[in-house]
Image (cartoon, rainbow, N blue to C red; front, top):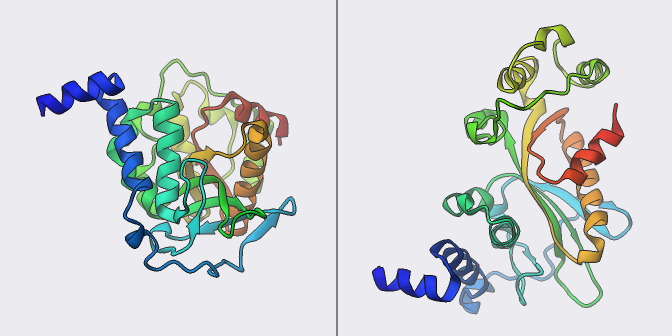
Length: 260
């Protein structure tokens, strides 16, 4: 183990970078006989919705059982949907943003309900994934990152816009919300109050690990399509309220510009 650690530091700079590259290597270089054992290029989802003419979006109830293959920008050959999403998560969140904490939780990205946005191109028989996001229901709220202490800060100042609270009450199955009930409360208390104000918990979910990939010149456009597709897909599935964690300032500005 000492020898491995020394080599990892020498080649990659640290063990975490080495582990990241190794996880990507395992996904990309699976034996081709295993990778294409059940490959069916004709397998398509006829129920997917189309956005902006050539982009498809859908909610997949459990990606671990989905047998379709998808291209990603991180592999020369197509991968099963589950592997493709894990690879994208590693490449974007861990390798690019250095969120090494996710190395111990990669299995979360390999199963369960996910939103996917993808497109078919003229040169490939397999679609290319543009965006994905993990969807978690209230039945496993104890696993939600939204309420995790890691994503809390006592110095945050909540934005308690009265009109926003009113529109939230009207648009969702929630008890009436008033600004006065949140005054002088911490962000944690406010978030929990909002959650327990939801009358029908099946209409709420958490959406996290939103990835955007593809051509860099189209990054903002793909981000817009992903947010629009995700909102429409969740609404169509009966979700009225979504808890999420936003890292990109552009996304925060996008939602602020939408206002009500």
